[in-house]
Image 1: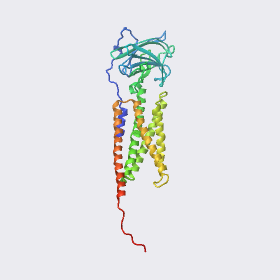
Image 2: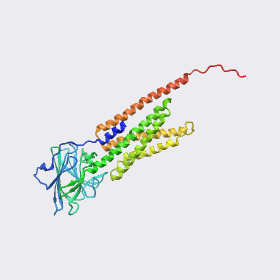
Image 3: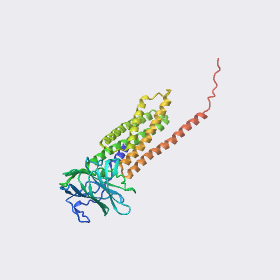
Length: 386
């Protein structure tokens, strides 16, 4: 229960930015340009100013946000087809190494396809400024359709830009996932920001279940089976403890696997291939392993040797893949580094316990062999045969 509580806290506690909030109404621009509307966007300490020119069907915007790092980027986009990033037509600004400000356009057809190029609508002018730790992105865009008065907006900040000018992947914290919404260009009202938090909670549940099952219960069950059975007094208690850990781990792991499938179906275009493939392999191997309980031959059966090879081999494969996938999940959730360190401490502690028990077990086995090899023969005189 202590481990479950620990990982519940681990995955549910995610950092939130605590910078003092300004308001868009107090912001001014170097060219004294005025906009008809402005919004304090609900995440990433960002702001949007805009003016709608209905006769020309154009939208002039000024997007203001602090980049994730001093060398990072900021982006604002309109998504003509859906909410979220997939399908967004994005403007991205960053400060180049020579100090100049660069603005690029990206047609994000999917989460795995981010291509620099022309947008689905015209951009008449674009530029950017940097001051006081904020990037100010200016542009005038021709709206996708005539008479549009509401748009799906997406905004984001990232940590860096490669030497050839390609933006590095942004974080996937709740504040990043909540950076989207519906914007009414006439009234100035905006909505959104809750979907990212809901999806993050689902990810946290998925992470909790899988960390507890593959990352803790299965390793503990393997430690029990390998080392406690060396003590005759622990038989058959070690077997029931081992079976309890493995069956419980399997049940929790199946729940985690199911939540992963749900997350995948709800997040079209978002694919974590390695994490998904390892998860499928874990589910398949664990299912075979659980059925091994019903196929377990007696100790003196001629097939028991082969069953042991099969059972032990799959068990160690689950152990290795489970730990690897926990770290893959931590990469995806991107919690603070202390949580990754905490898991390393937990799994290292289990590894240290296993190493200590390995030494103790071999000492016991060698002593038993030594005792058998030096035991004197029974020299009692046998009665003569009649």
